[in-house]
Image (cartoon, rainbow, N blue to C red):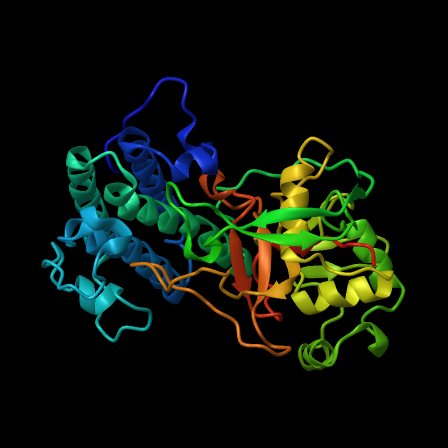
Length: 401
């Protein structure tokens, strides 16, 4: 694994996301090594999985190394940051077949041996760290290092979702404590700055901060729990067409859905398969593996609604001292992913998933899950998935009408 460095008193794995987005060279160096070591541990945990699964994990691992090398060591315009020309020719890779194999999913080129991929990640990181040592201490010069870190930190949650989907117990995620229910929070009408301001690393989906008017709203202090979702199931929520939108009802009928994904039993309690093991889930835990369709149906049944993005963001930041709790599940909101006003086009290395209108348009998830690395937990971050998506660690909270 890559060499270790340390700074006394710094928990680099759980460094605050706002700090990490503005991190200088020393913290970035530590974080890049930590991310790479974590990626290698997760990939090793998949070695005993079926061949196709192990190969998928190896490809993800190799792609993380390729992305970092492509945009840093091979990018002669790296010092220009977001002003770099993404189409400018890149230098050759230290792994001759890297572009053919790792540039995009589904490549026809044969996957290198596992040891070759691991060595590629070690060697490419060494090059990254050497270049980082010589880089200027400003946002342009550090842009691609911060971007590569964000991309590799996100790999951990994708690995965790894959392990849950396949029923693999990797032993790399700690159990969560039970929660104490809290009363809903009321927020007065206000004007809110939605999105992020310039400075440090800003993901494209958060560009740029703009003011929106928010009427008074009431929002749950925590995501909807299994106890609350159980009431919906026991009241025939999956049988009543009136609780569902047209697309959601069609989806539920097509897949034969009677409970959220990975739930084996949901009468007088919740028996859930967690990383291949049946577990009695504490009813105070947030409901998880819930699609947007199911979240919307629960809200209709309960006489409530999903929060808008601005409501969720304002509550997360203004309600932090009032008991607003987030970070256990990614949370569905009512919106689809659209560019904020002032967005000027994709930055080098970033890919947007702008949504078209309609019932099947990708819906926005806010917050983070228990599998999200601490450096990625940011109240302004946005993720989008199809409304039928339930493989991820997704839940929701509700607002009053």
